[in-house]
Image (tube, rainbow over the protein chains, first blue to last red):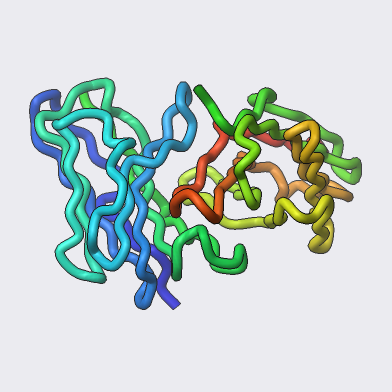
Amino acid sequence: DAGVIQSPRHEVTEMGQEVTLRCKPISGHDYLFWYRQTMMRGLELLIYFNNNVPIDDSGMPEDRFSAKMPNASFSTLKIQPSEPRDSAVYFCASSLGGTGLPVDQPQHFGDGTRLSIL
Amino acid sequence: DQQVKQNSPSLSVQEGRISILNCDYTNSMFDYFLWYKKYPAEGPTFLISISSIKDKNEDGRFTVFLNKSAKHLSLHIVPSQPGDSAVYFCAASSLNRDDKIIFGKGTRLHILP
């Protein structure tokens, strides 16, 4: 039973380059979340989708960040241009139903992409 | 302004003893609370949750206590085992607001041999 799959696991690139992070949610899950983890801010929600539609992108830090979900099995988070302060671990999570449903349907996280911008 | 606060960045506990991780929240509208556990190089995994209408939920060695008047919850692990060494995230959500979970910054638990 495959979990949430993220790629790449590690990304090192130079400032100014475009970065694309990818996520495959668990089949059948209708919610997809993108999080960023840093030492200073902990785990913060960037954007989430319901049935492929972006619902809330208020956590996206700047216009340099964009996310898409072209179909139920794939999502991307893009940073263009990248900056050193974007260095963090980015997690994708999916769930069956939103958090408004009973708590036995929690979010399932991928193993993250560790992004380093030089 | 952090709505979910974990004020202890780290905690060390002797193996076999009780580990107590604390969490405070500011939003009285939260309906339920969750704890996630995270190992290095892995994503967080759901551990245990509690509804705001309860004050205790137990699952094996893990018990979560909720004090609504103090806006405080805690996770008790007893007895603590080496495999419990991880980062623990406290999280909260509201049934009537949106589908977002608000996470704390996490507490790193070290179980000492």
